[in-house]
Length: 389
Image (cartoon, rainbow, N blue to C red; front, side, top):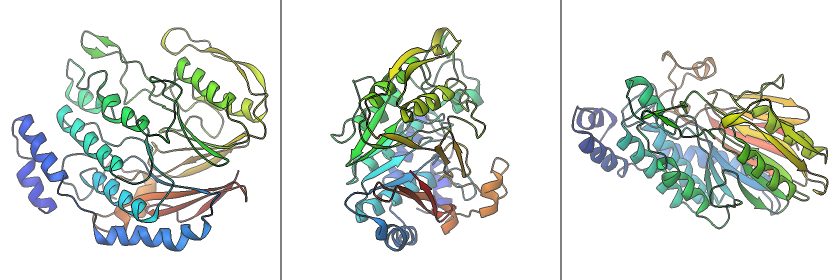
């Protein structure tokens, strides 16, 4: 079924259960496109593979696929799922150490049964791939865009929908660690390298008369428990090169919080960790986002947090604050040049369906011997950039 026929057959107004079934049936017929797989494979073979050693870690990264159950040749649509399928096909063929999706796997604007189906299908694709994976939660992944646009009186996603579909699958892998069954901090180790995952959509699910107190799409933040867990993980990180990943940027180039709540506190902990300091991290808030914690990073050896990598902004940007690299990666979702919400960055790429520019993804290679982190982009992404670690 081509994209136009899919639009005609699947997207006609029908009962929601039938739409979900039709969408699921279509998703399961999707196959990797040869032009896309061959292209990504060649990027890996020619650019990435020469830098791989036993000591390096190589990560395949997508972010902001914004999958929707619609057919679109110019903006968000089913192509977001295609990118996941094609990226994972290459990861299987090349044997990367880790697959990462940095969040906004779905657009969150479909009916809840459709959005749950999109999440389920994408997670199954990661589960069926050979490499360990981690999927970070994005601000669109709780389906609040659907609630926001339709002014519904009750939350379309239940409290545990995302966790049961995605989070539990992240941690149901022997190579992905967390402190306890409810912690939102995860990590992955290879040799002298540790990758830590934070959740920048750590927002409490609180209902007022059936509606959410916080709109997950509009509010980004971390709470005290996650910061306490981050402190514990860092206190037990000895002689490691540490890279941290999450969905949203935590601070601006000026050092101010880029999250609604406590992004600057994450940065403070990174700096304290690098300085082997003991101390206290706190804010002036009370209630849901109040923080008052102690830390002791004096026994972490030569460990250092060098880099924070995220998506969310739908463009690329690199800046350094207090010696820490902050790297923003471009969205994997198609953003056509003439669409009103397309960022200037993506307009310059003139992204088009079924062409190389439709794609956007990355391979990250971390080399502890050369103290270097390299990013190899493909599609609508910078081809190469290198950072000291």
